[in-house]
Image (tube, rainbow, N blue to C red; front, side):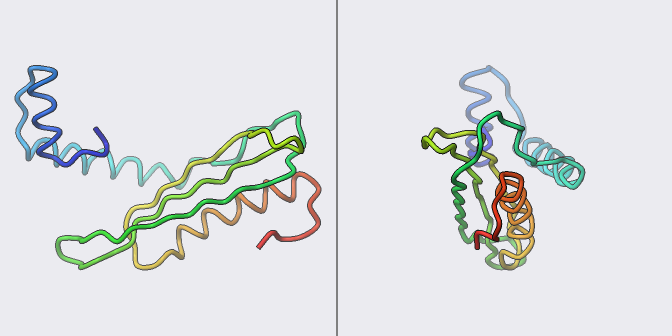
Length: 130
């Protein structure tokens, strides 16, 4: 349901679960969950799990889309992945990140860079990959 608009969630709850819920309730609940996640996010750690194999390759994926905010005009929401691969090309852990719309990519990239640095430097890399 996270990818649905409020009206779609309302219809889904009614059709599939027999629950009649007001759209305003869905919107308030969504805002409350988002606030809790945003508040806790700073304390969460996105460090990759320790693996027995050595990491030979780090794949970085970034994407964004402009979203029209009701009062603020357009802002960019960001998503990204940091994928780790061993020397045989087998995928190891992948870290998935997302960021609410902001002005520019600065804070999102500030979250991605330490993950890449840690993944590379913990495996004996001698240089910064970017």
